[in-house]
Image 1 (cartoon, rainbow, N blue to C red):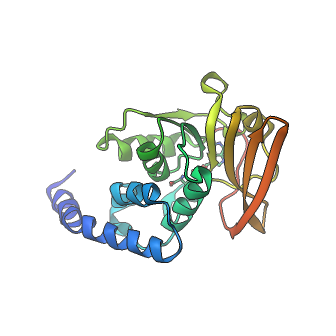
Image 2: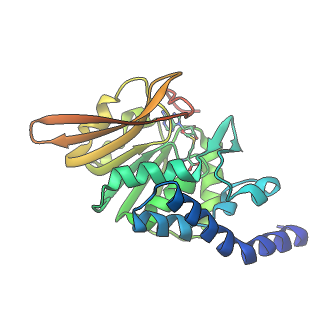
Length: 222
Ligand code: SAH
């Protein structure tokens, strides 16, 4: 990084703690009540995950472009999904589909024992690795793969979270959910809702939550 870039980042660094605290206050006002989730969002420097040109907007409650036609999720949506997934209990071993820039993976790593995150676009995953390097999160592993297939070698998972909208429930993911485990996903094509799936002794139960807007879950890798 050149000298100017360095000083710009430092400038943001000095104010980002305060800006992040304001972001957390806003999440609280918007109905996020899980203190562990609020602390996790308060701990991850979101500006590290967006282009320098957008860094000043990193703590606004907006989705921002991260390249390859993808976006970093809005802080409220990240908080909302993880709060619903946790429902007050531990996340345990987590699988995330759609690493993107790696922001949500870093938030999950604050709360989970282990996080596996899968991304289908190789150069985006490389970007996520670079973004995450300085945070040194030993419980986070990234993998270039098609999330529709899950990650059989690391299954079962206590929690699964999808960052891209599925048109149907991926069967492999349902199978890789541990008994008592929970999965949250944006579901649908043009009209999307958050859906929470729980695996219990007799099968799966589903709850529908808020309306959302996510990029679609695609097939294969690139
Ligand atoms: N969690 C991310 C949000 C990324 S946007 C963040 O915090 O920034 C959704 C991501 O899902 C995109 O990067 C997209 O490439 C990825 N994606 C879509 N379909 C996928 C699939 N089948 N397997 C893995 N990743 C997928």
